Amino acid sequence: MPLDESLVGRSFPPTEPYAVTAEAVAAFAATTGARYDGGPAPATFPIVLAFDAMQGFLAAEGLELHRIVHGEQRFAYQRPVVPGDVLSAALTVRSLRRIGGNDIIGTASDVTDSAGDLVCTTSATLVHRGVHGGPEAGR
Image (cartoon, rainbow, N blue to C red):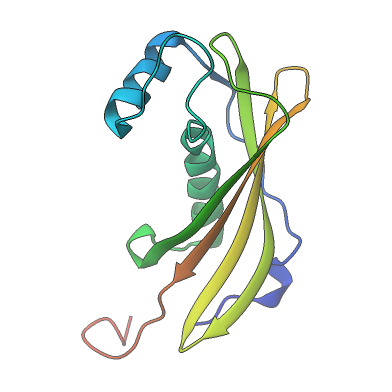
């Protein structure tokens, strides 16, 4: 079933506050192959929060993660993420279109600090694969 166009412009509750630690940043860097010298987090670090925000969106809309293909991802910064930050992310659906039985969902997650100031915005394109016959068609 296609997603409802009324999702466009809808914002979802922010994630729980996430305390950025040097250990978490170092682990992220090691996992992704990024270099980390103890300064600001790698540019892609906010995906940690954006993924949690996306999970909240999927749960709220009853969408299954195995039907999602992640497309484009972008980060627009106001300032770097550094250890000691306490951050949360709130996802907004920016666009929705349908191509070949799939929903193409444009999202933006504003990552804010404990003072409520914008740190960065992550934008993503998600493809929600529709059911095209097969054993799941009747579900």
